[in-house]
Length: 293
View 1: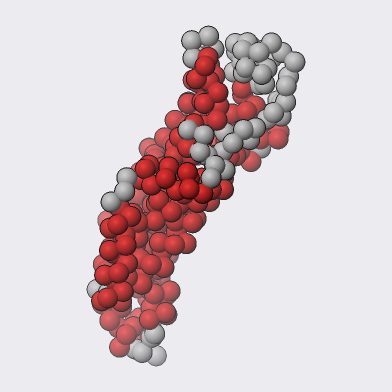
View 2 (view 1 turned 90 degrees about the horizontal axis):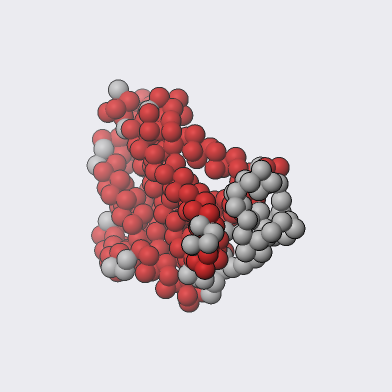
């Protein structure tokens, strides 16, 4: 009975350290700013039907390419559509692609990294050689190539971005697993007769969750920026679906006559990416046990 108590106690430590994570992030200056920015972007995406004064593809009847005014806060585009409404609706597209890509990367990289780091041997060698092959291709080049093969669409863009993030995430998970594998409570679990699945699920995984949370805040802005880039190149979201990248593509012909068509979608991308990066900095400091103490 005492052996079981000794084995189970360490796995609960990360859970204890994660209590009050939001409070600690909010107490971190950059983390607090990141929370506000990310929370604002998420709220805008969720409340798009309420916040957007017009539909994403609605022709307002106002003159095309009219500047910001009381009727249209951010002006109108080349078809007379409200730019503010399209940016609000486009936030949904960017967050959907970011979430789908990050989830796909986690679903693929997490089990591979755990297994490679814990069991080592030939399996680790195979996984890491495949990972090194993936890392040999620049992230952007890999995403563009996969999207070109799969075809342009929002779902294919999310898949391409997620797959291109997998090699880097496998390395992170494997490295954390190797570190946790050497802890005394893992040896105690093995001596107590615990199986590999139980050790991975009950002890290893809970102790790398902090790192995974930080990685998610790093992957999200990459996904948002890459989606906008793919859409800008015509390989991502396709019109008439609202997307910040699609709006930038349409704005190319009007950069001198209607600069707001490029400025405001670009600012939206900047704010979303900045928010997740600042949130990642705050989460890293809040979840670091040395800083927590």
